[in-house]
Length: 328
Length: 201
Image (cartoon, rainbow over all chains, first blue to last red; front, side, top):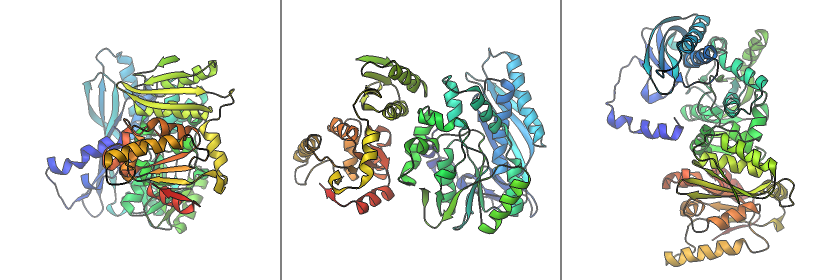
């Protein structure tokens, strides 16, 4: 769903749904973070989230695995570890059973890779296939990461290159090369667990994952919730091979325009930011990387740790006083 | 003129059809699409190939007219805009339009004057470098505007048209913009303050 339509609907939630308060709820409806968080005790917070996708890959196993990685990413964005997962699915009546089995197998393999347990699920008939997970995670309440902790002076990091959305869009039009599509798939399959664990242990200040609103939308979420301005250096952004080429050919999915309409008015766009790249950072991503902020002192340790462990981590900007997103 | 009927096709299909058609060459053509995002992507691609583009709203969606191309002498918007970055005072002024009516007193007369003014702009030797539309001025750049063709012509000849996003949002017109780019107060303020000559009508 486009960000504007969604915010229209959510805006009237307060009128149609009675306000529910509980002092144990650390993050709920009103905080619009990546997942709901409930403080059980001083040592334990449970994290709950649900997400599903329509097919993003031709191969059923790959699709299932990507959808599962994408669902679990919300727990990682909150700084938690995944404990339990339930399948949430819908398939057309006439869909061959081996395809459905393949999707479930792909999902289960990712859940297992995350060290979690698949404990059940619910499947309905649906004209268009969809698959994802309801996920339960654990964290220490004091270690929960959220969108509202960024401070002026922090460094902004991204843990995966951008471009999954434009590459799958180009592939839908048979205009993407096999190599480009393959690396996009590999990127979407990668769990955000390692980066999340590093962010928690080193003391990141804010965190979210880059998905449907594109980099620009998710950066703005941190800026809005933290009350800061985020300056992103376009030249430092990592892109998957092929992403920029497809952007230059304007093979954007429809979601790019919807994101632009919702976010453009909050963005200060530097003179040298080309239209195609500007649109590319508004393009929805699937199972994208984590977007982190951390103080300068922590940033150095994050870089060292990532390098030592062969993890991807890109410096993409800086947090400053102000509001909105500043592209330079 | 050839018509590519891409109505109902999702992105990026309309762009791929446009790309194929531009490669084949020979004259202008029209692409019909259902949604604004499809029109925007077709227009963006065509402009990047140095074509001139005009978008019109229709009952069923949008009509994108593409003319010129790489091997013609006609210059696309991009080149002209790049050339005009050279900040010379002769390059035209920044024109601020803060109302859909020119002058105050009689709105009907104001609209006629705006129409005449916009049309004249397309015919004079030194058109504005940038046109900033805010408050009810943004209504000039949306579906149903009487001056949409003139604004489109200004844009094709290289003018940067900035349409205030907050204003569009206020009027519920964000989805209806046909010309220019949706902008914000940073860019608008910066453009006005950095310009050597700003004219408000």
